[in-house]
Image (cartoon, rainbow, N blue to C red):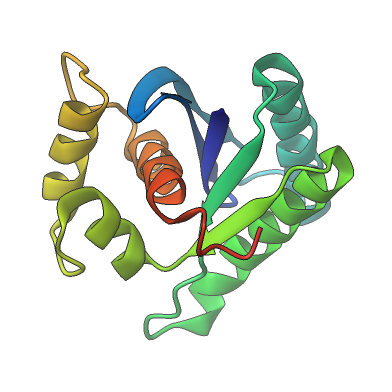
Amino acid sequence: MRIIGIDPGLASTGFGIIETVGNKIKYVAHGVIKTSPEKPLGERLFHIYQDLNQVIDMYKPDEGGVEALFFAKNITSALPVAHAKGVVHLVFAQHGIPLGEYTPIVIKRAVVGEGRAEKNQVQEMVKVILNLDKVPRPDHAADALSAAICHVNNRSFANV
């Protein structure tokens, strides 16, 4: 089964592709979709839409996992992420791909075993789990891979 993980963001939407082979997880690819802050919101969202469609057409995932929106203290900073996340849900629905949604705590617990793990701990465990030579970069792509790993570990409980 091929799983795509998504770390949504307006400036940078990370994606990570893994496969499950039996009970093993195999790395396939990762990257980011970047948008220019000089462009209007609609153009930036359309760019995410187009590029995410290309990623899905190229890698043909069976299911996906996305990081849930996390409201810290400033709702204004969460709004652009919410816009990007809406595009992600639209693209997945258009392709008929089930999408599980996971909070940062659930993702960290699935990857590290501890819901309050530090970002660098999560990235190191992604490297170990996927048998990579180095931590995936940029951070948004590493976060997307962790969402994919989380989906593998939680898919029977996910709302997919």
